[in-house]
Image 1: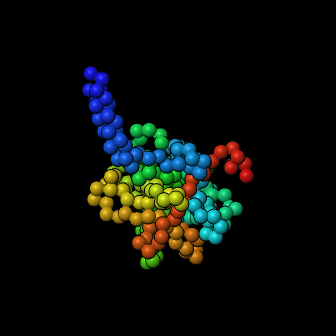
Image 2: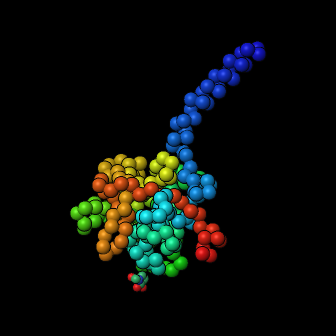
Image 3: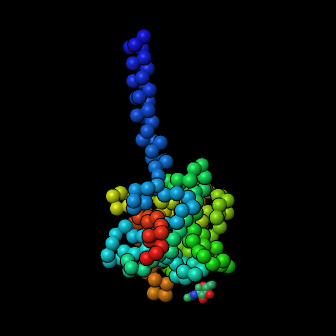
Length: 212
Ligand SMILES: *[C@@H]1O[C@H](CO)[C@@H](O)[C@H](O)[C@H]1NC(C)=O
C-alpha cells in the first residue's frame, strides 16, 4: 500500500514537473522595476532599459492630448503614464506575449482617444508608426491595429511588439517596436524590419514619482 502511494505520488510529481514549463511560458507575468507584477489599469511609465545616451521615458508629442508616441532622449524629462488592458481579461495581471491595449493617462477630455495604434507611415524608411486614436477592446480583425505585446528581451528587460495573430489570424504583420528619429516629431516609436527593438522597463507611477 505504502509503495503504491509512493509510485502514485512520484507520478504526480513527474507530471507536474513536466507541465510547468509550458504553463509558465504562456502565463509569465511582466514585472516592473521593483519586481512586482504589472496590473491592468495601474499607471506605469515605460522607460528605456538602458540609461544614459539614448535612455528616456515614453511620452507623446503633445502631452495634453497625446498624438504620436515618442521616446525622450533625455532621462530627466518625465514621460506620460500608460495603462494596459489585456484582450482576454481572465485576471488583472499583465502577461508576456499577450495582446494588450496601451493607453496614455490623460487628465483632459480630448477629441482623439489616447489608445495606442499603429498607422501606416508616409516615410519610406519606416513602415508603421505608433500613434494614438485607437479603439480599446473588441478584439477582432477590425481592431487589429490597436493590439501590442510585451515580450521578454533577456536580462535587459522587455521589448514592445506588434503581432496580433491571436486577435486576427489573417494578420500578417509581426514586428518589434523600435525607435526612428524624424526631424519634425523626434524619436517616434515605429515598426520596421530595419530597426532594432526598443528595450524597455516599467516604472509604477506612485505618490513618489508623481511628486517629482
Ligand atoms: C495639444 O493639444 C491641445 C488639445 O488638442 C491643443 O489645444 C494644443 O494646442 C496642442 N499643443 C501643441 C503644442 O500642439
